[in-house]
Length: 131
Image 1 (cartoon, one colour):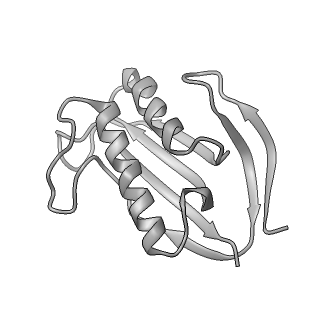
Image 2: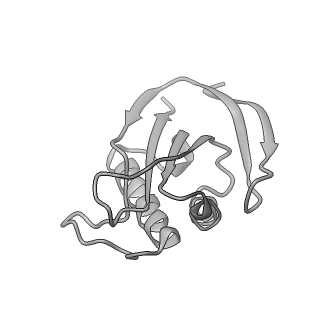
């Protein structure tokens, strides 16, 4: 079995989604830098809107996964950085739309700031593409 979800559970903090406490996977690893709400040319999508920025970050993750030969279904772990605790709900609503049914592992962190003050969320993804 190339992927085994260990202890799937329903989240209790925000929009309903199912995550896994751990995932055992075999295959090719994909690591990407933290994704933010910008286009390749640096244009910010959703100034002041953490949900829109998270949506664009997820769109970027999808693009890089496809270029790596995989899909969002191959993502095992997200680390989500927000600059304000109140951003969790709109950020995770966006993430849950993109990752519906994936049951990835997720860690959420509230940080004082990101590389650019206009950035409200950054999402770091790790994936394993099944052989």
